[in-house]
Image (cartoon, rainbow, N blue to C red; front, side, top):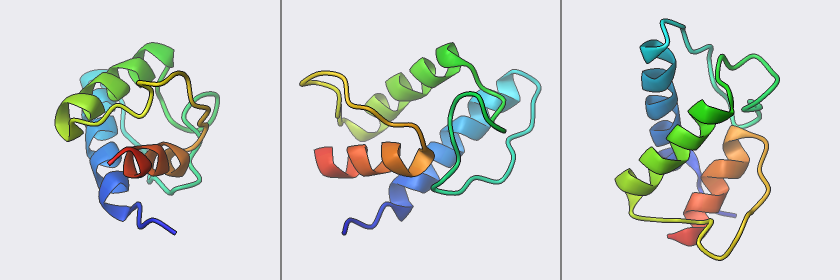
Length: 84
């Protein structure tokens, strides 16, 4: 199993920045935190922004070969770890 902790930290950092830019506060994140429709104060545009920033920071694009499903922070972190 891949250790997703470093990528989880990057995602948390960028989400905190995105949420702060909206004047909101990011609640504590876990790998089970759901991006949309849950406790995170983000919308689909914020999620798209996150994906662009993650690609810029990591140099990885786990979606290069097509859409990959993810719902939680941990699932997204795992996609980036697999693309590395």
